[in-house]
Picture 1 (cartoon, one colour):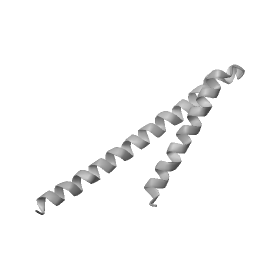
Picture 2 (cartoon, rainbow, N blue to C red; picture 1 turned 90 degrees about the horizontal axis):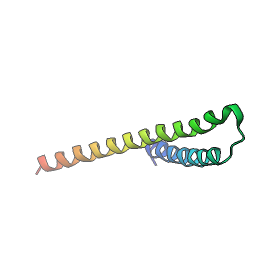
Picture 3 (tube, one colour; picture 1 turned 30 degrees about the vertical axis):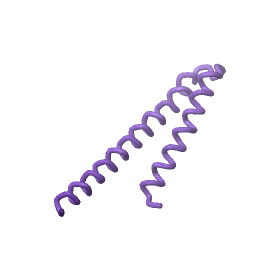
Length: 75
């Protein structure tokens, strides 16, 4: 398994954990002054992880297209 797949796997795991924390923070209202932080921090992890996963998908698609074009040119 290459490092890019490991990074993606860890990012997806962090996003799932952050989603659980965000749902818990939204349902439990006893954080006091830190209520907004307790909800926004997991949301920031979700947004950042989504951007990373999306960027990785674009990189994979671009690599696939480059290989496909090279394959067509060599025929």
